[in-house]
Image (cartoon, rainbow, N blue to C red; front, side, top):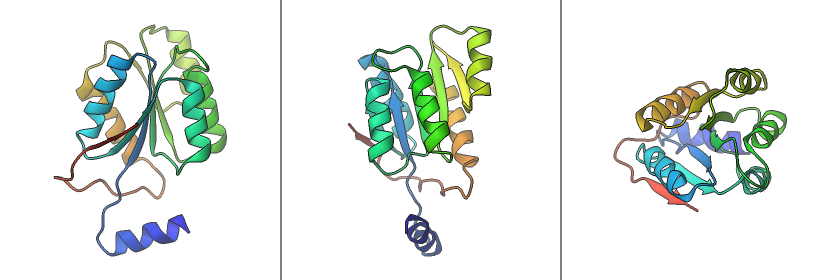
Length: 154
């Protein structure tokens, strides 16, 4: 049913809005991430830890991209990545961390992460990575129309 609705909206010229989920335990950083990603006219949702992210992934409509910190209380970014890889194969995961170790990077990429970024982040780099992830979604959704208002949904 979702695919049928998507095809109808694309055929009519309506452009689907991408759904992103930001998972970050630091409230200030989470706000910055949401602001940067919503400025592209996307629907951006945010949660404070991996447990909340997994709950939303299991109970809501699919997300196109999940941007998740790795080190968090109540389930880390690796648990979020595992949930996505096992149950949401179209969703891309971008992991972010303040601890950029090569072994952790290789492990995350081998387990299915789309990208692994090290803090401090340049928001332009994050936006570029998310744009690339959105462009690689199989049967991808179309980009949001320019000029649409950004939304933040908690």
